[in-house]
Amino acid sequence: MNDVHVNTERTDSLTSPVNSTCSTQRWRDGTVFVEGIIQRVGDLTGLQAREALIQVLDRDGPSGLAQVQGDFVAIIETAHEIYAYKSLTSQFQIFYRERDRVVANRLYTFWDEDSVWNQDYFARHCFIVPGHQCLSVETPLVDVQRVLPGELVTFRSDRVTRQQLVQRQYRYNLDRNQSREEMAPEILRLLRDSVETRLQARPDAEICVEISGGLDSSFIACLLGEHPKRPIRGVMFSQPDIPSHAVSEQYAREVAHRYDIDLTVLPPEALPRGMPESPSYSDEPSDFFWYGDIFSRAVAEIAAPGSYIFTGYGADQLFLRSPAFLPYLLEHGEYSLWKQTLPGVSRLLSRGQLNLSWQCLLSLIPAAWHRALLNTPGLSQLSAWDISDVNMDRMLTNEVSWLRAGKGLNVYSQERRQAEADLFSQGIICDDWGYFSAPRTVCQAHFDAKGLVDASPFCDLALLDYIYNEVSAFLIHDFEVPYKSLLRQAQAGVVPESLRQRKSDTFVFNSFQLRYIEDCRAQFDELLQEASSDWIDLQKVQLSLEQLSFGMATSDTRSVVALLGYLQWQKNFMMLAPTLQKQPEAEFHRAELRH
Image (cartoon, rainbow, N blue to C red):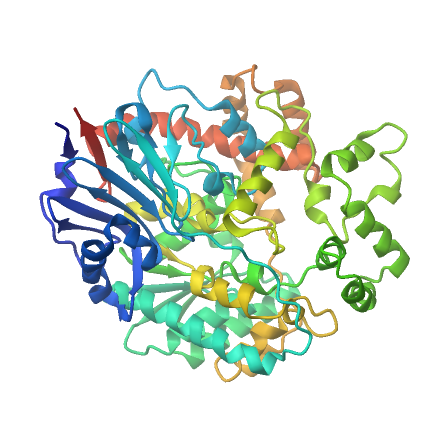
């Protein structure tokens, strides 16, 4: 006979504060633990949706979780089984170890002095393989895996089974007769619903929103402003010396004034410098760790405990046009549509149609072959092999000279493409289908201690389904009109008109990254001296770090930033894990089958 050992720190009380992202409810002879936001169960939202979860389980069992909409993970414990589930677009994680049937929502519970670091995970991270912290079961620790998006993992004494409950087979709609006016109202409705259901899920949480003065975050701020009973705190990062940022600040203030948002504008000198004096815990490393240490930490210092932190993250993936649409059309045999689209891309990029056609053809050869051309002495200097106008991902992704660990970029890239095809298909242009997990990976170290919750309405599955199933790709990848014109159409009457018509809203982070690396150079040099020479070539890493300090952008310098993020995270993880095992966070939950 098996029983379930339930962590008493979390389940002795089966009621949760209304603003907590964690809840535990009784179900039959066990419990249901949820971390994250449940937005909708059928027609129910808010706290009613959370309570309706039990009715779904009564009717359909654990597989009924596939019907629940939201950004969440769940661990269900019964007398003889443990079930672990992750919603398709969730930023949260569940980790498990098959050999002893341990399941938890934090990685630190698996750490001990015998733990072994996962070399393939390290290599994927240094290569910056898109989506590896979401679409790959591997974690930083050997023998510890993650629950994949939309997956239900069942643990019994004699076996562990994995079932894909939710997946998508997206493929672009190529209807040239659709209009923005026809399709935009539903986008507005879906985003309003996304914001409203998040607010209903945590009815007493204070609200903070990052506003850049651009189209994406300003739209979310305006939709929040439609709920005047919830006071809103706004945060903007400004660079007053750059003319475009002065314009952005003006737009951000206009949004704040129109919707009564209490806006704080932070110039560069008001932002944190360097690493935090007291390290904080994060389950996994991020190649954007420096962004978290600067901007996420700044937001955490301003926001009230337990706040929602709303952002415009995810809008680019849905609404930003890409010249990669050209080789996409060619690859899918849409030759007539490719020919019709080519002139607009040519004018936008100021590139000849013949040049773009050649780049499209090169994009269709296997990545390994193209990479070989780029790296062949005598050929690598020829601009003829450059396809960065239509395939920037191919140009930025290359072997890393200082990396010794792992199976190589080609293997990881093939595995990534297969994982993407299995979960979302290859019918959509997306440079990183794992982007849903990125906000938490970047922010966790700064947000969790204060109970802050990232909220990214553009990442909602209902919105993705509409954009990728119903909306014509030509409304997104339209090169004859201002960028994000479909999103601008959806903003009509909500976002101030002057902002809605702005021409550009790019925020450049390079200077912040370089300053951070410079501020922390001594700490990084110390970390590098402790790194395994079996995994990296230290001399080449130091050369890449020097090149980075001069602003050089290569695969080596991009990856050295990821390496520094890993080493910093690894040191903090080993330092904090033993303490957290003795004094777990309030949100921690662990389940274990015992024989």
